[in-house]
Length: 426
Image 1 (spheres, one colour):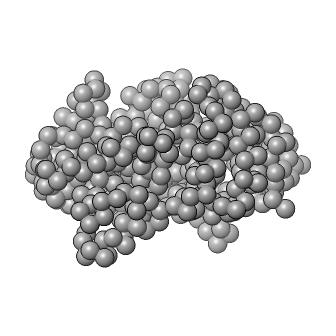
Image 2 (tube, helix red, strand yellow):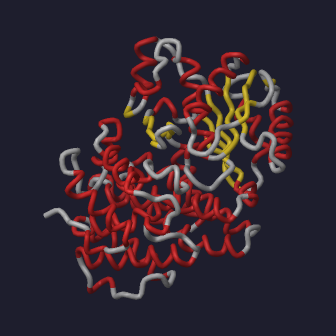
Image 3 (cartoon, rainbow, N blue to C red):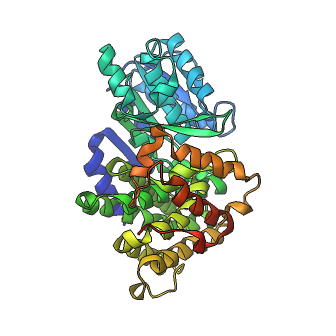
């Protein structure tokens, strides 16, 4: 499975993406193709695990003839707060680089993407609210005649796949609502991921990252149009299989490099998947739960309920996922004898079994801090035109007008664990 994953990623990104065990020293080689004076936005500044990575980055850049434009710029906090995007953009303006390098996990990468774009466009478009949605950055670049700042990304976490994608999630910490920039201009032209570095990920982060990658694969597979199904399935099914087959091994032995590599490849496939299709219900709802749940945990909890809602429309896709869970021992039902909603519930039960085995909550009621306000916030976000792509990516698409009728019961089911509350579309 890992060989197939490597082949898919190489066919997709070619030499623009360097990945594997022990490849971090090639950072300078990638950087010099994009510029000679770099600002580095780095996670881990002031933390015990950071200096070895930062020193290795400096050494690799120096060896390639790339100079630093200034001190390392501390990376973003979890969920890429708006304030961090502004702070990083201000630092870029002060350092005046010809290349931005982001070293960190998904939140830091998302913030660096947005900050690099804001560095180029912020004087003309200072209100970041106007950036959210599909293709806004490209439209701004076209109008101004400007170009995106070259961006090199070094991923440190098996999680979001942000180093390979056009997405940047930015959070308003006052309202605890995450919003989304979707734009091809944000795809880093060069990227690197040394899977060996993920051994420092603590267990909770390892689980949350893996389940984020699972959600990328799962949501794309469920909602992809028939014309793209074959392309998406070869990526997404493999990604899910690698995660379900290897997550427990990594949790048992955090320094198991074979399993760490498998999770890295799997979450990279999740990034590939969301460049073929798009995420939907699980991600949409998770954007309103940022104050009480890590992102990967939120999407994992929600997708089992969306699976029941989508089930009558996606039986063949659920069978493919269900077989992975059956092979791993999480599904005992005879899936060939089930269809529609019953099939969806059997697969959802398998997803719940995996969640229980790693200590995840399976209902919103179990989550400390959960209130009715989270349901209201999620329903309001689902009606926001800037997040409309999530509704449209569903295999049974909702509209803003049908959100209350169909999504509220899904959220109530997620609160209580009662699948019978979910209303399927005719």
